[in-house]
Length: 113
Image 1 (cartoon, rainbow, N blue to C red):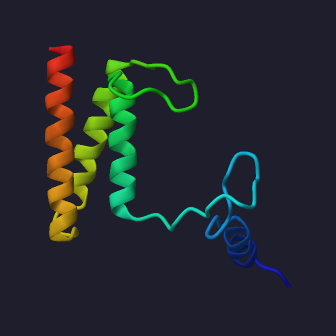
Image 2 (image 1 turned 45 degrees about the horizontal axis):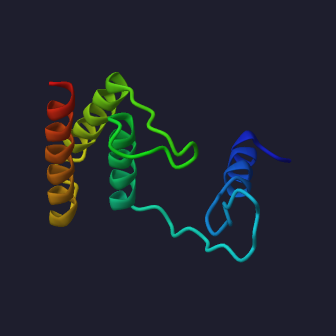
Image 3 (image 1 turned 90 degrees about the vertical axis):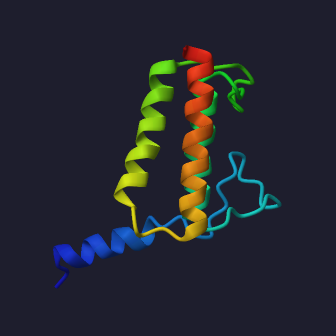
């Protein structure tokens, strides 16, 4: 007899993206993405904020997608993560968070005023 718990575990296992080639065209020659880690996650959020500030082009459209309200929200999201992960980060991760927040806030203030 299959229980709901078994179904959830089976779904989790079948939906795992670990080791899956996530290239858009399915080219098997493309590199497999490494497993996610905290540093990569923070860099991803930082890059998103920089795109929203117009400092980095959107890689899909090759255009600037400026949205200052979303940029502030993303910066606030990183701040929330910093607060929620306090005392749970390595020294390097803590320094990364501080540096990313400082850089994004400085950039935001220069652009938005």
